[in-house]
Image (cartoon, rainbow, N blue to C red; front, side):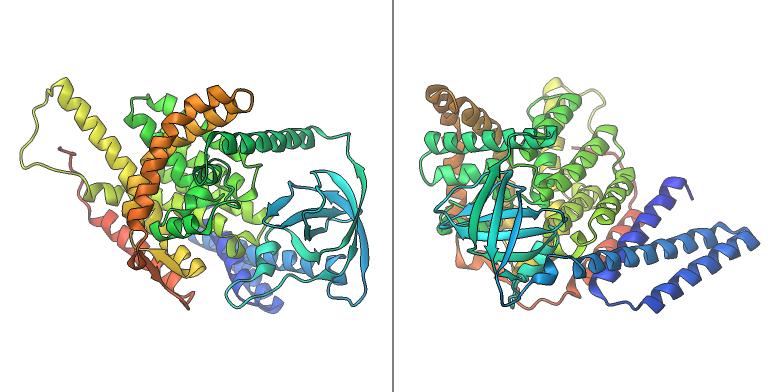
Length: 510
């Protein structure tokens, strides 16, 4: 077994350990027993000199380390100094710094405040009577509460993955100071937020409602001003990921962007650099959202694999990246749907795409001549690239389907078709939309010039949404058992393994 394969199985073992720790309460005595088994296997390797004992021993050891890592993270949460003040009957005064852009929605705004002399972060919820800015130092006085648990949604776990264990609703607030000295990264992030605000205003000036809300969703991942009717249409068509900062969204879009650039005539190198640049520009524009950064890492690795032509090897690299992310934050595996979708969609493109390619390849019963006309070669090349766009969409959705069904309780039955119709227009719409928004910050006329082609794409987008906005388009799956997820992926992996084993290589003939 090669070193890369050994590293792959060690990472898988660590991830499985995180999973066991996330879903089951494993006693410390059991973990100690696992460590003992691992040490015995390593000694057997030293005695019998059989590599299988060493690999199995270290895999079990890494599984135990994964369980311990999650337990340590849970212990840190339980002993958090600010969390221990939750749900007390008296008001508490805390002072800290606003560490992110205020989240404004309807009549409320939410502030993430890092408390001084601690690593604790408190989510402060208040009205919009006064504006606050990133890096403002404030003093809050109110009641600390544990985030709520609902029947179908755990707000506590949703905040847990971001390191937030306490909420303070409508406190008395006093601005202590507005920071004027920054570190380099604080200054950079501050300027990014300023630019994002300008672009937000520019979009509102260039596009009328409801086009402006859809453009803000696609370009900035901001759907707060979007009418509920449009949100319902996006859900019905299965394209809500286009207006959300989600892992699946970024991975799907970036791979499709590369395929589309190849389709329109870019060289592979040009398409690669353009796709990576556009992806990280998008992540910067949405303010380095954690889910976006994680998906950016996944997407970059996937694009590098396509550029080097080593799809299979990249599954190991992506698994390593996932293991490192979980080492830093073990709560991602269970509580961050963005992490789950980015990981699943990446693996789907790697493993399921070749199978889908084989199904949608059109073969003739006769061989083509060795020398084809230039027109024939052109159409053959474009057919392969169009096939890539289709298969990337389907493979990513195939691997994310059980997560969507379990997490959201519903799935669009028309999603494959609607995504196939809408996704090809997203790269040009995003490109022209960004240019229009940027130019519109200093020239309304220039912004309007580049906004004109966007209206054609937006008209087409809304027409597709109207067509698929039907009662039968959304299949509800309430009370779906979590057991469905491992069962689905188990059947999927066995099927892919059997196909890989029995397939016979043959030349592609169009």
